[in-house]
Image 1: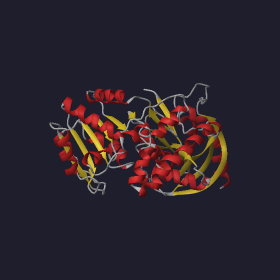
Image 2 (image 1 turned 90 degrees about the horizontal axis):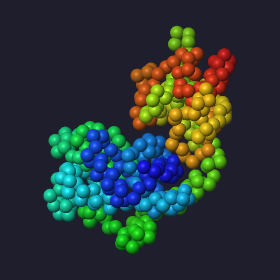
Image 3 (image 1 turned 60 degrees about the vertical axis):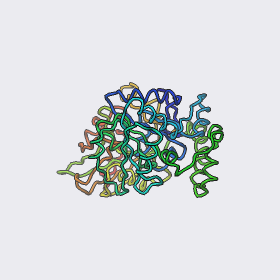
Length: 402
């Protein structure tokens, strides 16, 4: 399925009826599938603040555009992405579930706008014969799926609001083995229970549903401003300017001393066969010391590091022109955020803790390992070796001077 890159989030270019047909296919697949409905606000959250949400959105089976601003953004690509309103898709899936005799489970905040009892009653009234299970979730983050597994649903709806619902499905769908589909639905059930009122059909059709929400809920002014004005500005910069620029990036060479030798930490990427690399990430306008320490904290979940040295702009490459040491095209191309490529700086830091303290983010990395400094270059993925050689030169210079 064709994807359109909007601020670094790959949105599926598919018509609503085709999406529903695809979902029907998923119901009879042996795999589990995730469906998300990113809107401008969700995309801004994923690209500005939440790397984990960014990863989850980009690894969903279907990422359906829920917002007229995404449709306008697609026009610059010469495409015409169709909006798939989550509230409409939920109704269509419920009808499909009833027709196909599939069980539906719904996870809902215990203190949400609609209670589990209200949702269950509304669905019983509107979709008689549909088998439904609703579980209210406490915000403590402790979930018990015993009852849900006893019910054995094929479809999971998660109404926890972003980013909780997307993360809930990503981490917990496998814990309900009978489920074939997990979908984040936001406040869709609030419309069915009558706790919230949708915009008139005409406003929805012409893309002014946001104006209705502003009139009904003035407290949403800041959120709507971000979803309209901020998103539009960010996308224009993304499309017209970033394609000519290199993203500032910091690679983190974390070492420890062991029996008179130096070991360097590398991490293995999720979804990429034997793709080992140094921890790295965007600087996001921060100094190299702050950005590098933040990146290590985010990727390894430890503060036990001692910064030793930083080096600015050591290596630069274009995303679509990456080659390994033998001149072969790279097999790994990252999900781009609009930039032409990356210019990499380096943070050298010493690890002062214990391995038991390190916990890599399982949404980004599968494992970590310590390798001898002399073997680092051959240990990383071939496409990373050119930069690794440069970084190791700086590492040896640094440890000699210290």
